[in-house]
Image 1 (cartoon, rainbow, N blue to C red):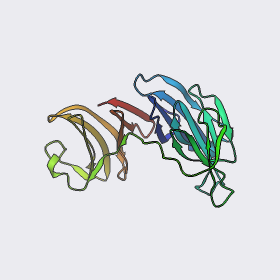
Image 2: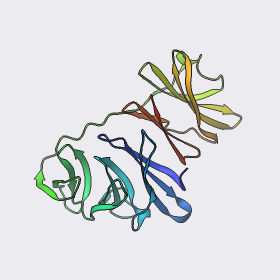
Image 3: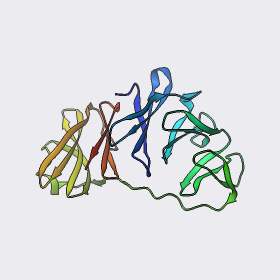
Image 4: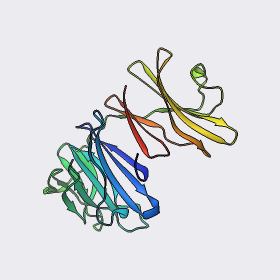
Length: 241
């Protein structure tokens, strides 16, 4: 259980690390956490950085967690990079560079004050500049699978409750079918998730109960692990599929 609402989740393509950004609106505090999503071990939980409300989770790569700020409070454009190691300590920081993409060679960054953008390559581990004025490097390929959204779910009517309402999130992996859906009772909805194999439920969970509108997201898969948020967006679950 997190103090605030889970705002963003990012996974590491090279390690079994998941990083979570949670926000407590009541005291305008942003927290960052990192876990091993196989063992459940917490590397660090709910740490903050200076002026943390204005920082947000960006990416996770090779055991490093990167967070970004913004050009100004009202702008969505990113500015600044703080690199946290797996202990939650600041490894390095650049306040005048923006993370554009991650490649096998390092981080591709630019200075948002300079137009047109000039891309540089910096070390993911130290933040040291490796090359200036590079062309865009090949982005790191990510092993993330998101569900298909089915407007017509009649083919799964034998697996779904009779009061299922709205679109169904569907994904099939390793001979398992994963479905996330809403059920309706009066003017409220409950979002549920279920994993089936050969028609038999292996796991069922409630993601959100007594909500007034449909949730637009349900789950994603990486490295054969199912990730989802539940408990009023304050709990995070990893499930091996």
